[in-house]
Length: 293
Length: 234
Image (cartoon, rainbow over all chains, first blue to last red; front, side):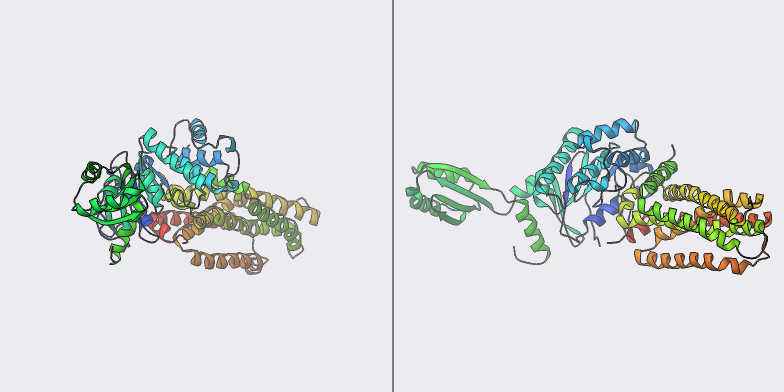
């Protein structure tokens, strides 16, 4: 069940739609694709309601959890079938081009049912983009794939966005994948969007900024700790051998570094620790469930 | 090529590649074609009249069975596998999709039924010692009316398979298969030895097939993507 969703996806961006199982990710996709009707409000893709406009579907590509392909047909026959349904000009050439794009040219005459899970997914992506849609919806594209196949699919998604200038709507609960390929995300929980922002902003604009300093000389650790303790605007100071960790509340990182250098402390490395998407996601989930963050 | 023909072509190709289904259909045709023909011809009545009766109801029953067998592959299997959801996102109306599938069932179904009719006639001729050629109304029935019934049966069953959930479809399949067995077993007794196949009978059968097909085609107006998606198996 979805509740009061409002969001838009910009042209050419890779938009991540995150959420746990059962949060409503696939339902949202179905509503956007015109397969389910919203009980209130509107859902438009490329300024059109897909439930009322069959021809608009030519401008949209879809990869659901199921690849939408037939076990008893060959890879080539499967793609040619969809190419003809979508009125692709020169379907045979386009299919050959796509088989090459996903690295399956030499498997084009093999039955789809004999493919590995990774190959099936790659062919599913080829099917979703064969009519050169302006936007492509991908539902858990790397689900069930081994790490190598996941990497290949992620590379494909990035190529679609960069080379094809395609807008990608990526449904996933694979946080690592989303962080790698998406520019903006929405986090869904029990049918409601709990966070919606760019990954850059979400990971760097947290309430607390983690900061760590590695000292060149471990013998200076005690002295450095004392200097930092005397500075205001620093919290949660920790020391582990020659590494000092802290949370910058109000003092900026460059002032911390300057204070240490001014006092003759030799630094090897200083690093702002951005929050990972996983941390943000878990925070959002805890907040949504009424827990303490 | 129209999208209807694209869908029909794919269904025919896929059915031909479904070895188990084609083997079941072929065995059914051969068994009933060769063995049922002579068995029924051993009954009462002139051989030509009995052959006409057989050509009317047995070939029709076989055609409907082919329709049933192939419809399950073409409509239900796609729904069970979840492939239908991707097709629903294609630039294809539900009526085009339905009609393409019905054609995809009717073409191989009719061809196999023609084959069964030839087997029945040949087996009957061999068994009786006469060269049995069906009357013109029966020929028309086999060539035109039976495919119309295959299309009607497939259209109606396919429509039901689109809108019903998997559990309801299992019940429906159960009812249909027993209905066909009933038809095969009792039609001969119900229609009686005095039954003869006339143009009026064939015309009425053709009208019934067209009526079923037209009513189902009309009902497809009420098909919705939402209904299909919400009855997909989890």
